[in-house]
Image (cartoon, rainbow, N blue to C red):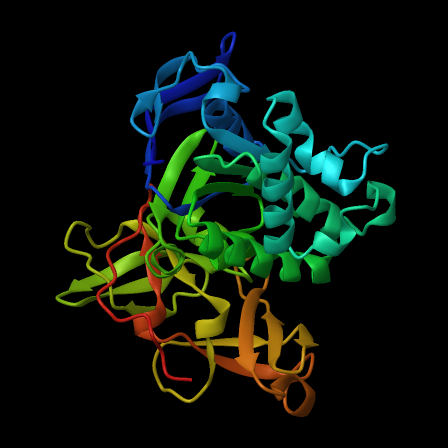
Length: 374
């Protein structure tokens, strides 16, 4: 068993609290991703699990064993950092074997462990080279291999792809997913990139200011964000938000009046705990906005800027009261053939696609399936 449990875990530096009572269970064999903006506490949380930061309060268990006072080397974990931290004067074999040699593991076992790890990572043909002769992706594989040979119960990754270029990051995301499938070991991965989180995780922990905002599968967080923070953080491009107030509450839906235009839109959410006149925030994802095609839930705007990426097109449409234009994502070649800057555009916001958040930023429960016709 290699489950990780945190109960009321806190971390403070003097009077400054970084982590605020973290309660979290990471299941055996799970790929868990910590995600959040810079300064949210995700790396500090990872380092407390590793034992590199002392826990101020609460309890941490790994595999059912309380490890609050256990040194990092005895926790059954291996950590891969953002920097590769390879020894430049050693070849790859010796870099990967170094920790085992310090532990006085027999030479034959070291040989087997290193070559098996190199095979998993497809770097067995590079073992005689030194780090200076490798690409960034190859160096990261060596750092991962150094962790694999220790056969840890839990792998910890602290933003391991942040030093790589965009194309290589995409490739390495696949490599991490394949690695988890092959090793079937508990993995905890920290990133600020929500695309990495969405593509890699079994479950995601969204953190903000040292607190957990929501834990769930990528699809759960995308379809059912608990609050404004999660809704705005998960999804790329991010969700559009418009200030409004509730103008009617009916069984199965509510109507909201937009603050600066008075336009009324219907949203299929449960408003039974709210009342008419309550201030709310309306949310709609760019990919759920449609061009016209309906007589209801329409906003009228003008295209300010178009980005055509071939398979998809982004149109940026200003709307009264918004500091930033609405981001609209359309399929196909609309940006090349039909959309132009300055063009008037009717935007259809399907009732089943809308989110409504109360004055405290909490989401009203959605009553519709999130899947929408193209």
